[in-house]
Length: 194
Image (cartoon, rainbow, N blue to C red; front, side, top):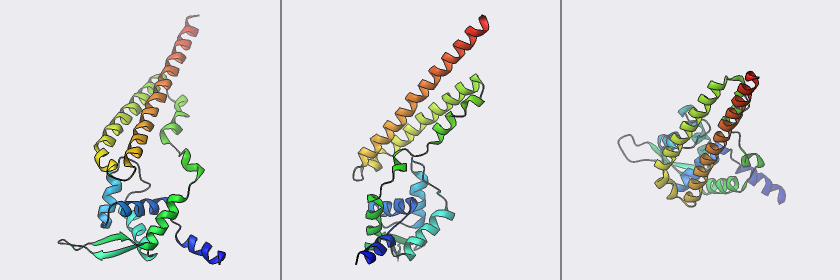
C-alpha cells in the first residue's frame, strides 16, 4: 500500500512554474491561456520564462495530466478557459507543502554582479549603484501599483510587505557599497598624496 501511495504522490509533483500556474488558477479561475500569460507578464515579480512558447505548452501539460480542465469560454473567440481539477488541487497542495532550502536564499542577479564590480572604474561603480537604486525605486512603485490586487488574496498583504522589505534591504546594502567605494577612493587619494 505504501508503494502505491508513493506513486500517487509522484503523479501530483509539479515544477515551480506549474505550481505557480496552479496557484493562480486556485485564486482566479477560469482563465484563458492568454489571461494566464498576461498575469505573469504584468506581475511585478520576475516569473521564470514568460512567453507563449513556454507557458502555452505548460498549460497543455497540466491539461494532459488532468490537473486542469478546459471549457469553451464566452465571447467572440470562444477561447478555452481553464480551471483547477481535484487532481490539480492535490498537486497544488503537494507543491505548496514542498520546501527546498535553496528557496530560502534564491539567486539574485543584482548580488551576483556585485562580485564583479572590481572590473569597473570607480566612476562606473558609482553609476552602477545609482542605476540599481533607481531601478529598485521604480520596482517599488510598480509593486505599489499591484498592491490592491495582491492584498485581495489570502495572505497577500504579508507577501506584499515582504516584497517591499526585500527591496528596502537592497537599497540599504547598495548604500553600504557607496560607503565602501568612498572609503576606497579616500584611501587611494591619500596614498597618491604621499
